[in-house]
Length: 83
Image 1: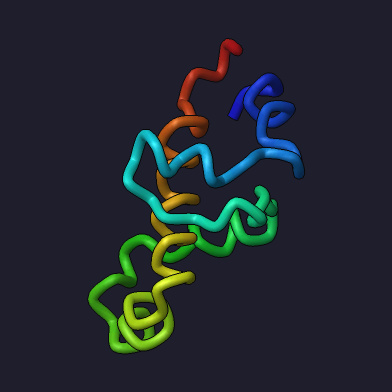
Image 2 (image 1 turned 120 degrees about the vertical axis):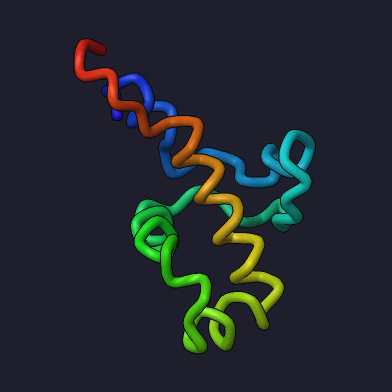
């Protein structure tokens, strides 16, 4: 992640802005949180486990947060070490 991306993902990042582009339904009051970002980005690959299905898939808010932080990671995590 570049320094510019880190700076852009501040505590004031509005997750609701993802609703328009990615069909992710996040409440307007929910702002970016680094702890949630790291938590939800450790979960890919666990989607077929019973624990994931019980904790994430069956909880609408957690499922949308999972999708939102996955989308942010897709957008901002780059392998470009020159930036």
